[in-house]
Image (cartoon, rainbow, N blue to C red; front, side, top):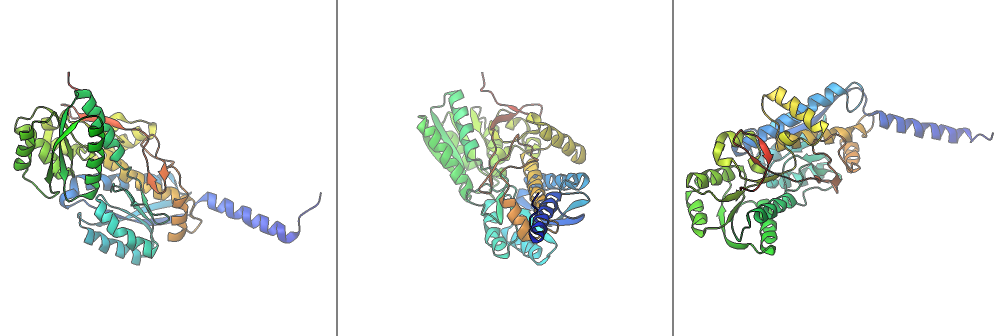
Length: 382
């Protein structure tokens, strides 16, 4: 048999060895990523869920050797308190620490948008875990595991309006939030295309705490359906005030109503308010989801929710990239590996494709809280 030249054999061996080394993942040791949290301030109810989900993922990844034999993933946490300026300060500190290979962050879209040019210029991979404005991802340095809620909001609005045979609608909108404006516009168009007349749009601000005037204005229009497109604090306040003022017709919410802390706060006022979700621990779609929900409940004595699932997925996404980032991962090699991910291998959504750096969940759940404090599939009132 004819043998290839010795120099070619050496090149072939080196290439094969390189592939094996890459497949084996990083060398044994600790690998650090930055985690910018919002566990204080106006976003704290959601922020704690994101953080806990990320913490659980890092523990599992380290315990299982998911990235490679003898490897551990360590989260370096810094608090932003919902303030973009603090988040920028945090990410600059991570940039200065060369041990940090990537960072994950951001519930609100303006914060994510403010970090995007900073991490891109400094070539530090950023994985967004909660912000939902379109156009945030920009490979190879910016990714988003939070699926865009627009299609789910639209599905929720259409399903609810059709079920109750709504003829008219009123919309509450967070006037200072462009992402929610886009979400409302999509839902409003879908309903108007169905023949549902818009009676009015009531504007509030994300920092508002008194919704008496807004609710009075909306109730005076006497719609068949009210739809809430706001961040968490005003959404809870609007629903609570509507029910306290005696409004018994259908209110359609959004995924900010999913955390258990919101049900604990509102209780009966939240029962039967439909909203769309990509994940619910009570309706877990897979073994991974069930295992995650059980582990989260055991560790934190609280039910897993959409936000904890997204924080969990963000850290697993980074770890998946780390597996293919070479024996000695760098920020650049991690970014290149993340750019090649077409679907998360370990996720709790029953599938999580990544399209141009943006996650897309496959299913939409139309759900509500029942009187026993469980998220269940929504059905129209009889």
